[in-house]
Length: 187
Length: 118
Image (tube, rainbow over all chains, first blue to last red; front, side):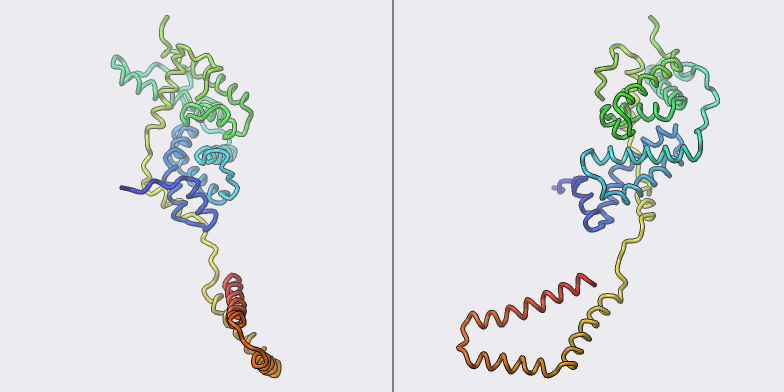
């Protein structure tokens, strides 16, 4: 029988107390997928940039691990660092370029007929539509829907009040509805 | 997500976002050397130079030797005084234990301190 997995808290304690590199490596392996996926969403699918920012996120986490108070989940704390790294990069690069076809998207040209293909096409269109949101709106959607955080947790990650998170989500959904209007069911 | 305050009933966009979120969470990104690249970029561990520990041990030895050589009479007098004191009194078990424990504790304490400083 395999031993029970060591908790994040225990691994963090090992890193903080004795600078255990293996423990930190285990934390990276556990959370790299979620952090990289989140950054891919935030960067509108720029995989290379997302991975660079993910590396930066873990390096910052290592340097600041002593300040992690365990009030939130470790993953939530990582999301916050990742979002700050993304914001810093965005400020450096000014604005990320919008996709060329900024008009209302056609409902998945490849998705006529089958529901699976339709769903995949919807997902692609949603991905493209997400790119037109402001960084704050996209981040609110990613934290609440993709990372499945509560509004309170998302507010903690984004460093803003809960009301602001709700506002970002409402505005984002309005924009997405406008751009994905062709996907709306007919009445 | 807690979205009770949002009007989610029959909201096709809400459903699409939830479906996209569920897909996002279920798609595991393989490590593919990512963790290794992060670990390679960590700052070097703050280790003491290899020569420092023996140098400090040597320093303690020099201090002890200097004390013995510098004030030989003091140690001689102290030893003779201790012997005279012991000879003049009956030695009990407690005295023997104290004689063994106190110097050992002092030596151990000094060694621990030296190790921590090193």
